[in-house]
Amino acid sequence: MFKKILIANRGEIAVRIIRACKEMGIETVAIYSTGDKEALHVQLADEAICVGPAAAVKSYLNMENVISAAVLTKSEAIHPGFGFLSENPKFARLVTECGMVFIGPDADVIEEMGNKSRARQVTIAAGVPVVPGSEGNLTTAEEAVEVAKTIGYPVLIKATNGGGGKGMRVVEHEADFINLFNIAKSEAKANFGDDSVYLEKYVVNPKHIEFQLMGDAHGNYVHLFERDCSIQRNHQKMIEEAPCRGLSDKTRDAMAADVIKLARATKYNNAGTLEFIVDKDENYYFIEMNTRIQVEHPVTEMITGIDLIKEQIKVAAGAKLSFTQADVKVNGYAIECRINAEDPMNGFMPSVGRIENLILPGGFGVRVDTMIYPNYTISPFYDSMILKLIVHGKNRLEAIKKMRRAIEELFIDGITTNNEFHYYMMHHVDYVKGDFDTSFVGKFLEELAEGKK
Image 1 (cartoon, rainbow, N blue to C red):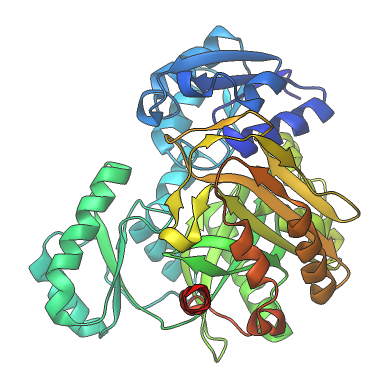
Image 2 (cartoon, helix red, strand yellow):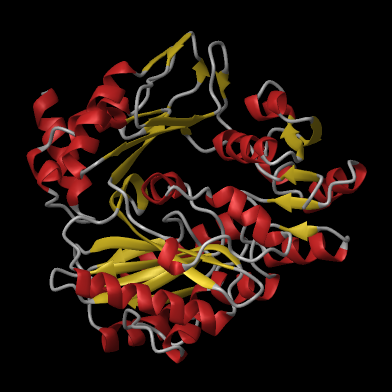
């Protein structure tokens, strides 16, 4: 087992990884930017080293500085968390070339499955259903228009190396295509350094379902059931649940079998997530793979009792998975709300400033993953998510009631958050019934706006 791990990340995921390492008797090294010198992960780690200015491109995304910090502190492995360098194959290779272990899948797998166009080809070859779309990247708008005609509108333009809804545009009509195509390419270039895009048929109002996967270097592959991530805005998730209410056992079993099929085809080792869209008739299509731990991993941990971060570390150290498929059981229901420093009633404008007072909820079945504390200052340089509120109940209704109570207890003074949005959501009749898809948030926001007038 490793003696020292450097966490190449910040915020709540860095805190989460540090806590797992401490329980495993592993020393930790935090990296931080000048804008994060007072951050909680810096205070909790055994060592901390500054890797650059506040701007992420000069610090958390600076591969040379991150690698140098790991070498300087004699770290044996690097855990990238999610975002930043977590799905960068060049970084994964650099870690290995410098004699350390990258806690994630092999660089070749990241490159193959992180490139969405290539991942489609691999998935098709494995016999897993995908959304109809272009074969490979599209260079010119004129070429893309012809492909869109073949697929049929509406279509979805997607950044080949994208994520988080960036570099993604829905096109309803041919007249809008070229403008939106150019916008998607520009956004992809700005966010991922690569303007490559491809097309998919846009499936109207589907469910967004993802399966958690764990694999090891010994050829063992296990799924940990599904999460429903349909509550999202602009392709960015807001609330996640596990398991998915309303998914039939037949469809669940078929999707799970395809998850293992694709894991074997790629010889996947470590944590990963396969994302699908599911239409009203329960036809499902693979859309992408996230070759890292997910923001929403806690809901899977809550229903399975398996610590995914610890499992990541053990597998990276060469161990076999500590459980088999038969060991993984679903116990109850879990919900996660992403609490962001933003104003939902003002276009979700980010909110920055000092947290003057803070009360965190607790009690049986309530978990809080966060990096904030009283007098902590929210920076404008990073993602607006500041806290994840997770609850577990013996069934979905109990989990919803527990989330309502937990949200009532949560008090963050000094900044604006989307806490109220989540509270209203937990009381919406259709949400409580489980009657929602990826279009739900847009309708819900219209209702909120009407109610505020």
